[in-house]
Amino acid sequence: MDWILHNDEFIQEVDLKISKEDRGYQFGDGIYEVIRVYGGDLYTAKEHIDRFYASAEKVKIVVPYTKDVFHKLMYDLVERNEINNGQVYVQITRGAFMRQHHFPSDTSPVVVAYTKSVERPLELMRNGAHAIFLEDIRWLRCDIKSLNLLGNVMAKQEAYENGCYEAVLHRGEVITEGSSSNMYGIKDGILYTHPATNLILDGITRRTILGLCDELGITVQQTPMTKDQALDMDEFFMSSTTAEIIPLTQIDGNKIGTGERGTLTEKLQKAFEAKLNLGVQI
Image (cartoon, rainbow, N blue to C red):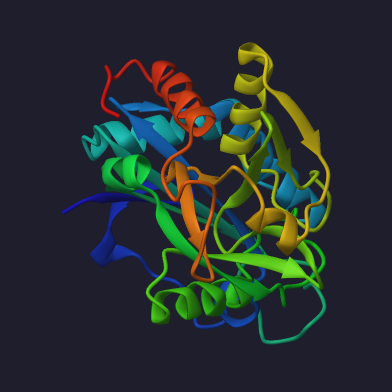
């Protein structure tokens, strides 16, 4: 059986006890992170941990470790479970208390983390995926990586029911992000993506991609794009911690560009892969 982290102890899943009045369970009152593991190493761990602490601060939850201790706990969990390629999921809730909406004054936060093996989605990265447009019905603090994901889940389900991999979310005509990803369009060699405001999550992979664009000399415009502009792009792709960079070759049945992975998308994929030291796989 795999080990999980519960507060400051490594235990077996069968021994995990969560109160029925845990505020994460009742209110979604908590935040989380997903950290990718490649070759047994936590990729961009510092950036993920920094964002975890930033999200916790925004919702006024105090993480009960220093960042260095937290980092070591994540590494120890990966080593205990002998994860080579996979991910760590970690969340913190405000803790357990009799049900009331305002914050209780004397709860102890509850941390749970676990690992699983996840392979890279190489076929999708090469051949691309289809998506649909959906109105973004989520709350206005998407910059917080909170446990409140019902809007995201509903969007992902609608995409699934329509035979698509992802939903491209929009507020009115303006595209924000995906149900579990960031979105990018490329037109005439320029990359467009929504700026990192409260309307999107500033993805760690997104930050890596923007850094790669700087290294490769690709011009970036962090400016909102409309649905019509998205459909007129030469290339369109999504990114996330587990998906890396996946081309979106159709949206709402409309072919984007040639309908295949674009030249700059592939260039960014290869530059991203080079940072992983896993050899050429795509």
